[in-house]
Amino acid sequence: MRCDVAAHPSNRPITQENIASTEFWQLLDGETQEALEIVAPVLPFRTNSYVLSRLIDWDSAPDDPIYRLTFPHRDMLEPSEYERLRDVRRRGSPAEFALAVTEARAHLNPNSQGQSTLNVPLLDGRRMAGVQHKYHETALLFPAAGQTCFTNCTYCFRWAQFVGDPDLLFAAPDTSELVEYLRRTPEVTDVLVTGGDPMTMSARRLQDYIEPLLAPDLEHVQNIRIGTKAPASYPLRFFAEEDSDDLLRLLERVAKVRSLALMVHISHPVELSTLEAEEAIERLRNTGAVIRTQAPVLRHINDDPAVWAELWSSAVRLGITPYYMFVGRDTGAKAYFELPLVKVHEIYQEAYSKVTGLARSVRGPVMSATPGKVRVLGVQEVDGERVFVLDYLQARDPSLVRRPFFARYDPEATWFDQLRPLEGDEFRLL
Image 1 (spheres, one colour):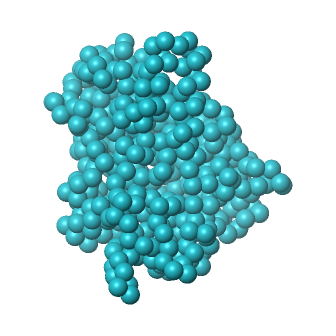
Image 2 (cartoon, helix red, strand yellow):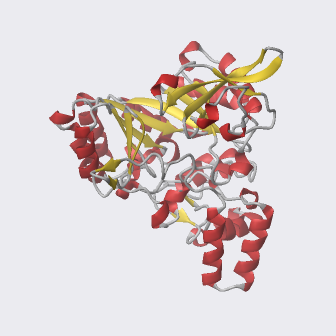
Image 3 (cartoon, one colour):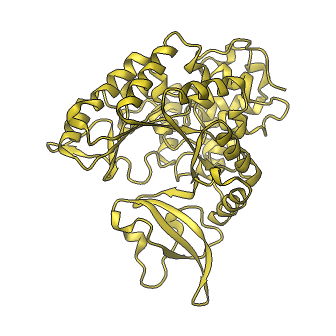
């Protein structure tokens, strides 16, 4: 059953603070209500009525994939951590609970893979606010005005952006520092505007961030990418909001002077199944933007080759290019969602074999690890020993890109740092 209690979905945020006053609260069981009150302060809950009324099959909840993608579950924290938070909430003061929440976040590896230590560039000796530069040709911009999403995915590796802790936040007040950095760094050809979700900003505010990147003296910046989940989580942004047409006109202007790519996070084919999603995607394609889709493999949500084959096939039908199948990062509720790398590769391989060649643009499974984007190519036997065959699709050291290397076979390994090199191979030290 899709819920029809919201005949006209809106982008009014539904969070742990106000969901009890909405018509959706009565649809949640007691365990979910308790989890929202205990887990959501650690891993923030935020959604909207479109997700709850159009995408979730409430007859299948709590096992519905979009339900799992949206609502915190007690198992997203270690059992002992959950019990501790529940006890503090019941017996302690609000200040004691807030402290316990902060401690719980620290256990969840909030900024994994060197995001806050290795990826932040310097400008005149100062760390730049809201900018990352990991690969030599690509810089990331985190607009301060775009540090929210229409819905928070429970797996999100950038959950730390949403908890209100300034020490965990990447946020650029404007593009002035980035523009100066780009003038001095001509090897950067791509800028990815990310968040949060930049599409939560008004068209005027997004324009303020993007237009400076189109300056004539920045012609080496050839490609503008925008990371977003809005076509999946709130497609009405592109045709039903007061400034929807202004937003599309902005994208048209960008696409006329730069290559414009929308990097859309789509975790399950149901997110492409609505008329609203189809309308949004058609309008976005008409701007001249290329739309690519990417997502991680997630236990409880999409750990099924048939789901991925349907997702990629649906994307191609709508004019979207399948781009990445990721391995979930080692942060947040990783233990809840993770799968062995062997299983993830099996899912990728079987799904890949079932789709048209037009969908085989997708690369995977890929780990965004500290040294680069590590792809699992498969399992083979080398000198009588089973090994993982890997390569880098991107790397801090560009000379490593697409050079195969090996790791000892481990059927339980779920992330790059759990793999062990073969004799004489120092890939983990890169």
